[in-house]
Image 1 (cartoon, rainbow, N blue to C red):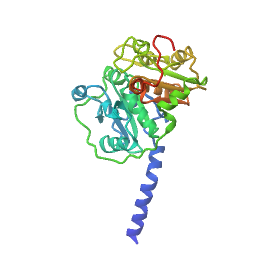
Image 2 (cartoon, helix red, strand yellow):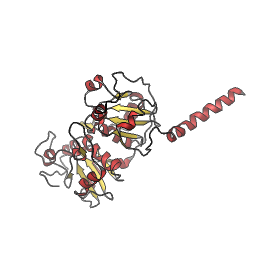
Image 3 (tube, rainbow, N blue to C red):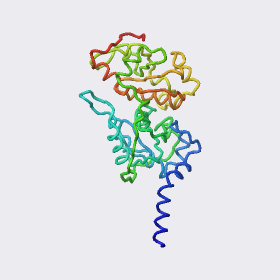
Image 4 (cartoon, rainbow, N blue to C red):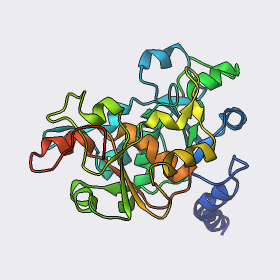
Amino acid sequence: MVCFIQILLLLAILFFSPFLHAKNTPFKVREFPRLVETWELSQVFNNPSIRIVDMRSSLTDYLKGHIPNAVYLNFQNLQIPIKGIPAQAPDRAYLERLLGENLSLSNDMWVIIYSERSNPNATLLAWNLDFLGHKKIGILNGGWEKWVSERLSITKLYPSLFPKKFFGKTIRDTLADKKRVSEQIQARNTAIVDARPPEQYSGEEGDEIRRGHIPKAINIFWEKTLEGNELRIWKRREEIKKIFLEHGITPEKEVIVYCGTGRDASHLYFTLKHVQGFTNVRLYRGSWLEWSSDLSLPIKIGGEP
């Protein structure tokens, strides 16, 4: 009888723990995905319900020092060749293994991601998590430089992690494929945004098969949403709103963002959807690498859409 009761209690704990976990969030502000400030993370970085991911470009930088309990992931692990085209999006099964087995992430955990100089490495992982339906996502505003500037805890020790199970569900409205972009070029209620530097947008620079941009695409370089030099944080919401409004990009429109590989565009995706609150934002993950390689698709040269 005692064993039976113990089994019932164990089953109850296993069943209800995800709900209790979700209610007792380690963060006072519960709305996610969002930007997370350094002072917030500094109070909870030891919490076992949080997985911190260091996505700085250099492994050497991580080895020299990182936020305690941060696991390292290079952004190139999120870029794989598909049908010969490099730097494309991995499928759900690949991502589930990477997140669960390698990053020791389960569905009930929060993921806080940081990179250097608030670059798009972190937002690329955030988009992949959004694509899988995971909402407990935070980007550390100001990244590594802000953490260091405030003299917060740093370590060289690796976290002791064990494989977990992560299960995703494909959220199609986070993604635009080549076919959808082609169909939306002429649509009045759709804005296509190119996140690359102006020189690549215009066709003056670029190493892809063809130079230029998708016809009707508006150029908003991803760095325009940030302020600062070495230490870069997101601009205030009103300033960011003004940037997009000046280009006719408003919340009621469908917005498709792209760049060279999808990485830089993920920064605008996160900014539009989770900083500005736009509800209909899609990332063209194939981006210019895929578009320029299809010679049947139109391109445009110059600085105008």
